[in-house]
Length: 484
Image (cartoon, rainbow, N blue to C red):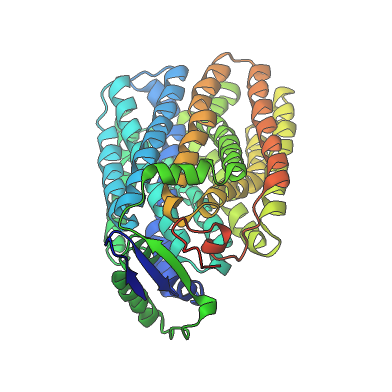
């Protein structure tokens, strides 16, 4: 139902589209959504792992000859690009739609990662990594929004965690690709790391084809006064999955006062003023996991080569089991976030990650672990930490009104990465460069402390969003006054 006001600028819409989307069973359509959109995390994992796995090759390159600090700096450039891309494309995603932007951001990623292979010095390499990060940061906002709005509420938690955990499938691809292309004698020393960047470009081209079959988010369409288009999209989804639409009733409808555009200032105020506790929670969770992950993962290859004399060409073999633990964590623990609940599971995974990091870091400082044992220790830590990090994205993507969802994801991803992530690769590059285990251990303790503090914050002000429709977790800004 639609009732145009006298001014023509706003409309009162009564619709059951959200209830129809949440009432669908899991079908091949949802698998397509997860596959075509969730690949973003695979690409990010691939890029981050390649950067870490080829660190030694970049130092040994006869053209680049990076120092340890420069290796850390290019990692920071990638993250800085992700921050800028998230902010820019987060705004555009809420303004122009989910579907348009996930083609644009993927195109930027493909172009930049391919260009990285042709870098000729530190400046060009850092620039292309910055642009690659911008594409990935933009992907996070567009993709998280679309997935949250298309997946039924009862599957949202486990699906979101599993998709975020697929980052580590990309990490495995990156590690295996690095091992393959950096194998001594197979390619010239300065060509192997360049060839490795073709993996992401090839994978991304395949994803472009899959995304052609995905529709615009019906929730986004109704919020932008395009109810007729939303009805067509939902009707097509129901036909594709073989589900009959539910009977229209007051119990499954919402009333919205919508317009074609929502002022960006109103969206920002909805995030920061209307939900201040959720804003604090989102920032704390995102910043803690960003520092924790980026500090350790970007410097992992440096630790192996500096303290354990692992050859640069063999680093990928150590990252493979590490990636497996990271992937299994969200996959195994994910269902518990829907069944046990968000608050206990998020708090527990953050706390366990911090405590385990402090313990393994202490063993590292005491020289009680060899390279294999350290890798096994990281695999256990990140079984929990991967679920924790994934839950941070889940929290910020479902805790704010629909109109500002992509902007909220962008804002907290950008702030969290800027506060906790951008500086950490550079910092740990310096710490590893000292050659002192105690200096690296101090960095580990900082990361552990941040995770424990984030756990305490979650236990105090966490949001109980499990199995709830998005419109119930956060009331839409355009909700009519007479809708409850």
